[in-house]
Image 1 (cartoon, rainbow, N blue to C red):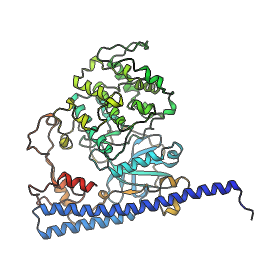
Image 2 (cartoon, helix red, strand yellow):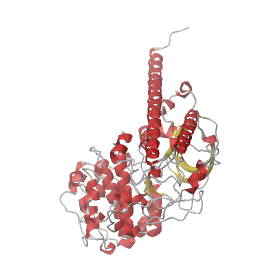
Image 3 (spheres, helix red, strand yellow):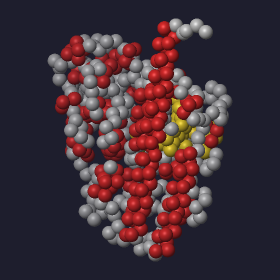
Image 4 (cartoon, helix red, strand yellow):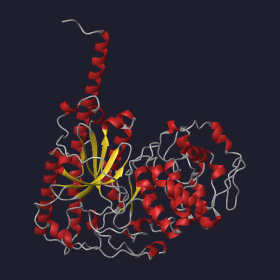
Length: 536
């Protein structure tokens, strides 16, 4: 047999090296996951023992509750070994569609639990260079445990697609809310801007930068509280589609100062200034089309990101300022009819940041927006979220109680399958059910699969408890107190005032709760130091 040509040897060597690297990554991920799982199991046991020790519970009841936890842990270990696939779910309504895939409501067959399934095509991820983006999203959702971040239940893959199974938030997104209401009041805006700050802060604490924060990615749960996600599946900004944004563009804006009420359009603009209502109508007409375009909307992206001059976490605070402006005015601060013009306006923000007189914003609101839509070295949040929280516009906000408050807007949700708060999408083809699941790693090392080794993930909290007698009944009995109104959010509370549902039970794993009769003692709360130690 003739020896292979040198080119074939080189190609074979390259493919082999790629597979070896993938196998190495698989093994490392496997043992890292095993160690992390063991540590988390110990922490759950320790946390529950601490709570039981502080509660008025008999020794027999303590033993029964600990046995329930052990059963739950065993079920979780079985779940981790189970190879999940699309055929484990009943596919329902499409609630999002974009360049890389779709988001669909689904029901898990074994438990009847309802989730949102995000489905991404591997070949498109590779072709468009989005492998690292989708891996970072999966890692962020798996790592960050926050009330303001959408919860990832599990992730898996088959030959063609990646899947993220996430909690379903039936309240829709902020984009839809703004399209329905045009603008929000300052109190309503304050509530949602504050919750967005907490969401951004939670990912920054884990050294993640979102870079694409916009109303499409701010979702509302059935109570109206906000959670950050990348749910819209709109294509990330494709800067190659825009003209070169050189330093000349940036320098052109340095000679002018930020405009205020009543400022005229810059001298190089020959078009008459549009009124706020005209701008709003034009924005509403084009909003959805821009969001789902192949280029993406740059309206909320910081100038340093567009200029590709290097950026940090501060770029997310610029996005916050642009969203706050839209909430109060009705359209983004640098909106233009085409994305290219929008990019130029953002880079030359000094000439184009204007507050329409008709909007009647408070001085504090204008000041905060101006301190978010500015140079990086002057931008609030550069030293941390505490800089923004301390701004006078947020006077009276009780940051620790935000999630216990009644939300500024409570969406209409009729049942767990209600999708009325999402855009309607036509089925392009019948939803495919496939039994292709992530098999042994030797079968996973095709040229495209090596890029997605280690993508599979399962969250402890999704374990259902059908085999644990009494747990489901106990959960049904746990009635939460009524939330206070939004107005109380901006009033100074007494020092003794506590969140209405602030109980140590909140720290238990989601599906393992104590009977109502087991009330905590007055000294049962766990200190922040203990909480930080557990997080470490």
